[in-house]
Structures are given as C-alpha cells and as structure tokens.
Amino acid sequence: MTRGGTNKDHGDGPERKCIVTGEVQPVGGLVRFVVSPDGLIVPDVFEKLPGRGIWVSANRDAIEAAVKKKLFARAAKTQVTLPDGLADLVEDQLLRRVTDLLALARKSGDAVAGYEKVKDWLSKDVAEVLIQSSDGSERGKSKLSTPYMGKFIGWLTSNELGLAFGRETVIHAALGTGGLSKRVVEEAARLKGLRV
Figure (tube, rainbow, N blue to C red):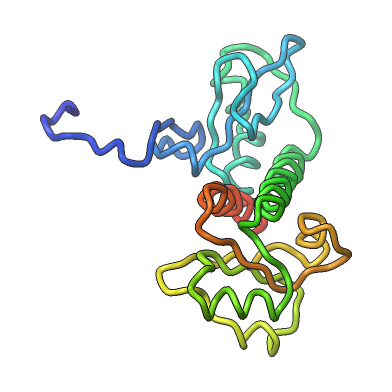
C-alpha cells in the first residue's frame, strides 16, 4: 500500500526514480548508470554491474540534462568523471543490445528477414512484431502492416538490421511470439528515446 492507503500496481516489475525528472517508473523506461572504482560514470544497459544504480529516463534530453546540471555527482554524493558523449555511448550500447537480441531470435527461429518471409509470417499470424528499416523505401514498407495487437519497430537502419541477420542490409523483418520478442521490443523502445 502507498501512503494514501491505495494499492500500488507492480505489474510492470521494479520501479526506480529518474534523477532528472523525479518520476518513478518501471526500469524498462530507464537507463542505469554506476560509478566505477575510479569515479567514472558508466552506463549499465544490462543492469548487471555492481554498485548503487543511478537511473535516468531513456531519452537523449534527460541524459544530456543530467550531464549539464551535474546530477550524476549529486546522486552519487561524490565527485564523478563523465565520459565525452555519454548519450552517444548509451545509444551505441543499446543498439548493440538490440542487434544481439535480434540475432539470438533469428538463431532460435523466432525471427525472419526479407519481404516474402515477413509477408508469409504476417499472413499466417505468426508475426508479433514487424520491424522495418528507417531508411527503406516508403513504397515498399507501406505494403506490410503491423500485426493485429502487435508491435512495430521502425527506427533501426538497414545496415543495423543487417548486422542482426548476418546480411549486409535488411529492410523487412518480423519477430514471432518467442520469449525474446518482448525483450527486443523493450530494448528497442529505450533505443528510440536516444534517437529522437
């Protein structure tokens, strides 16, 4: 129960407070940072590093505001060193996380790439998530629709999708209902916040 006597819904898992906005939200919408032994702020997108976590909303403006207003030092209660281009570093790590998860989904048979394969999965209601590259032809992308009650990811480039699928470029991809789909969607949503 909260202080007001109402039940608090913990359906989205653990929650943390953003040091910039002060909002309490599920960890899926935040990026964790820790202070290394030598006082460097390190992004922890896997949420595995030891130490007290410092949480910031998963968007570029929030991370840049935390740097500009020296909120990391305040949250850590000590002097800290910030790497140059912290938001870019977080974006790179999240991109790597998303492409690694997509590669795992492909290897387990829960993801396909290519227009015909994606179209087949969509027609058979196998696809849960439609993924289309941000730099693909609008005409080609308009021929495929997001699955009913499904998700859409459209902020990865064709080269980035190609990394995940072991090809040079990929324009169209789809995820099935496997266990990795939810995690890919969550990590891609965090990545989108860094790209806007």
